[in-house]
Image 1 (spheres, rainbow, N blue to C red):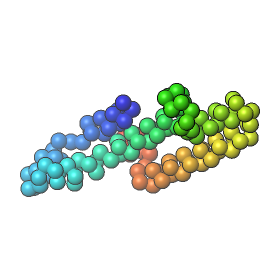
Image 2: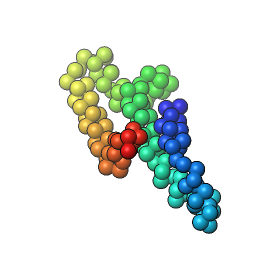
Image 3: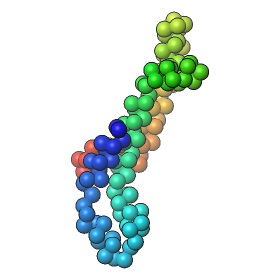
Image 4: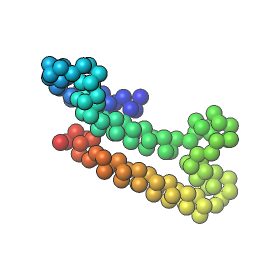
Length: 122
């Protein structure tokens, strides 16, 4: 559901005239989609993926309950180090590694698309 909101906002801003122009120039519907609609909707796809990624980072209750403790995610590892083992140093080290990974992913995403374009300011 969190992916739908940025996708809808981006796809609603794409003018129908562009699709009609592609069709009037002789492109098939699939080619018009691939060459016109898809590139214009990529900011919404990247924004939605980023939003879902951020929400999934701290989401550890459901995997803990459904996985039965067999599947360990990074956020669960931080929680266990603090709650069960009282190892704040280990928990903070894992949290810093997670933070650096997230910042690296955001840096890579920002190379492909600017924040102004994702927010619809340009």
